[in-house]
Image 1: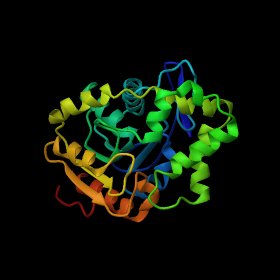
Image 2: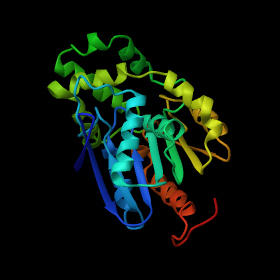
Image 3: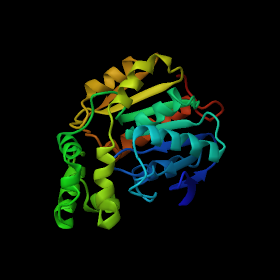
Length: 278
């Protein structure tokens, strides 16, 4: 992955393919690794961009750098400018929903379209474990590494409706281990501020672009009713629940998601073979 230096942070990113630009935004406690197989599959027809938000994945995790929604939206705006993109398609999961919406609504970043999957975008949000960590981040940050690893593995595993493969669970857990990863895990939860989500919801009526909302019907972290409310607040947005899927649609239903992504991006991309109607 390449890196972009921004306000003392190192943002890891990658690009592949050719065609209309599609930018993937991950959530928490994830990284761009969740989106990589889907980006690779689309790279024959699209120029795909992946990035790890500051404090996540392969990006820097400096304890002095805030990682709240506001900072991440500013980082996203700067990164899009660095790439020289104007009106890319944006695909966002979890926390990436709030970041992409804020960049659009507050910073005026234009998109060609926006697809959100199980998005942290409007209140309320957060699993019971997430709320517990938010209340006691300093205490949990000091637990022994082996207990921390067990907690993170159980937390991540709970996001899936199906049992995760060991290789997937290990990949998703790895960035949060060790002297750098463990405190970073608790910092990013402590930085969660629901006022940003309330701001997003108050401005949803201003969104004027094609929007699609996908949601795991079995998502226990953020119930489908939140996704329905999100879509209802955006003029013309469509909402689709996906059966037998939890919060990790990328791993619970990869074929369904890949099909949805290609169908959606083809429908909103002028000039592509097989382009349908919105």
